[in-house]
Length: 341
Ligand SMILES: NC(=O)c1ccc[n+]([C@@H]2O[C@H](COP(=O)([O-])OP(=O)(O)OC[C@H]3O[C@@H](n4cnc5c(N)ncnc54)[C@H](O)[C@@H]3O)[C@@H](O)[C@H]2O)c1
Image 1 (cartoon, rainbow, N blue to C red):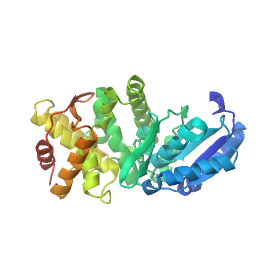
Image 2 (tube, protein in one colour; image 1 turned 90 degrees about the vertical axis):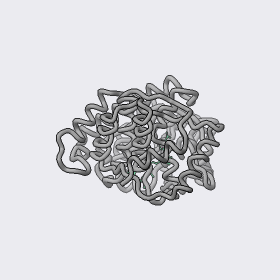
Image 3 (cartoon, rainbow, N blue to C red; image 1 turned 60 degrees about the vertical axis):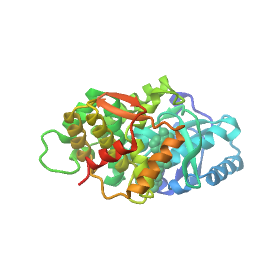
């Protein structure tokens, strides 16, 4: 932080699980850097990413005397980053924000691009802002304590980013995760720090380049929604209980590829390669029985949110996507059938 000129008081906001795992290390590095700092405990979980907690955090900052030149430091997963980022964007009309993401999902996706938000009632991220961090510090070593399912959750976004952004990165993932492996299931590569480090660096570079060209999601940034239309619908139809976000996005990507292959826009080889890579991440691509009515309702809700048009990201080949607006619900449901069983 000091190397970036961030010498003023730091307000380190973090949940208990992260404090337990990384608190000592964090305190030592802030002490060593001579940065004055306070910590603020936050409650964890998507259900706590609320305006209520944002208000408490704002009161906490005020009680500790945080001024305009303070630096808000979010240390945790995407929930922490979104919540603290939102508070940093509004407290005294904006504090500088440092993101220290500690889940793979947050390192490869949530901490990059400046989107912040809190949930309300039933709607996710309904309130939010764009507030770019002045610094993102990602250390793959902090991922060591995370369960496999959390790593797989982040890997879905890694595969998405490779598929939409870089043929070379996708080919490397294919070699690392799927190349020549007989055994089904998660690849041992996921346990290697060097593997995760390259995933984080590649994803940050690809996402940052897209966001720099389109910071407010007026156009190109929408490609980052690859797999998310069907993914969100599955999460909503399953009431979020059955799926991690990454598991839903993995199936959503496969559905998008089935649509693309059906339209002659992508090859079956691309679809098969993506399936192998996702399985190498420990992600299932098959669709369990989902209530079709609930899925239809979730898909049409998505369409309403986007002014009647379902902008759909169609993978064409590794590193290339199209955005189309004529994909029908029937086509999507058939695409899911293509991956069922
Ligand atoms: N802003 C964006 O662009 C963006 C993009 C994608 C997702 N998101 C948001 O990210 C959130 C999901 O993030 P997530 O998957 O990181 O979940 P999370 O923030 O809930 O973290 C998962 C769990 O892991 C714990 N944890 C975090 N780091 C740890 C560590 N190193 N060791 C041990 N435990 C640790 C957390 O305390 C939490 O209990 C959602 O709210 C989603 O909306 C935002």
